[in-house]
Image 1 (cartoon, rainbow, N blue to C red):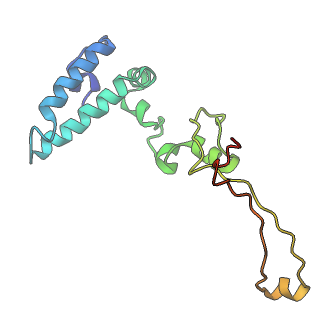
Image 2 (image 1 turned 135 degrees about the horizontal axis):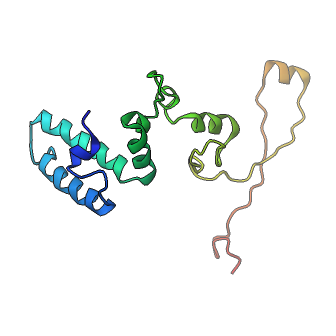
Image 3 (image 1 turned 30 degrees about the horizontal axis):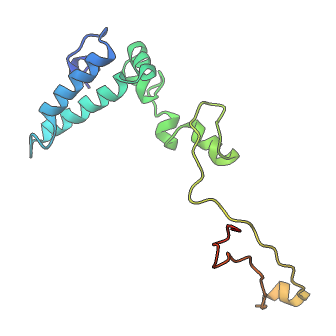
Length: 157
């Protein structure tokens, strides 16, 4: 792949505004809607977009300046696949999977809960025989649940 600075047509000392301006210009030239059916242009557009993604982020830009493309791909000097390549999101996701959400000790970002929040748990005490427990059985249970008032909608007003 070509040098990210060359792809955008800016110098290595370019400011964030210069990079943004150059990206917008190149993106307009190479966008697939502007060049329908031109696969080479579409590929070049992807390269330019990746270059802007890296150079517009200060941390990634510093890694790119120091280590080149390998620094932003996450691969070390060994040339083999990185942990991020193997596991999708890197080590942070692995620790999050085993130890729950929140900030991982490796700098992974925290994700919110998947889906709506859980409601209160209900507990029912049911006396069953040993045979019912071992072989399974269906028993009827009566639950008394709080229901919102139809007049006030549960607000108490």
